[in-house]
Length: 230
Image 1 (tube, one colour):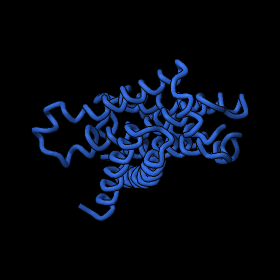
Image 2 (cartoon, helix red, strand yellow):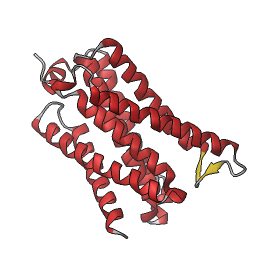
Image 3 (cartoon, one colour):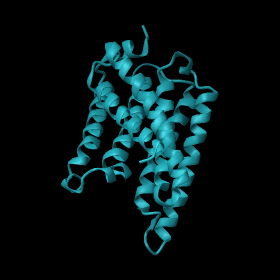
């Protein structure tokens, strides 16, 4: 294993562990903030390395290029959401949206190529794999349009944007590690057991729980504390 691959895997493992801690502890607490900071840094590192690796070895890992770019967009835009300077969208948000649009167009194009190919795939991945990532990017773009139209978000809507973007980034990292290309390093018996899909399921259920709680008006104190609002 090259040093490049090792750094990518180590950063991804740290990101998954830190993200799990951030999900489980009290929102807005010092532990949550520290875990979130570690998650954000390690996630951006592993996503950038993954995108670069996918670009270099596109014949085997093209989808990793897209997943890495999309994860960078989701985590960076989610992180910016809870920073005071991001209450009103600016040039950094515009850069993130541009990245998302580029990823979405590339994924739609590659997915269409896979759909039209005799094998039903491009570089080892089926059309639905590319289209699923394209849907994720499109949801983010729709959220960005909402942010620009309103001139910013406050309260629960701001926290919800932060929550689902960071968690979707965590979902991509867990998928890459447990059921995606990273799973190739794990024993075949474990890959075939179905247990490796559990982390993704738990992440999806946890983020759904918090989004429903926010939608129902719960966690007012956590919202104010997490965002530093009075």
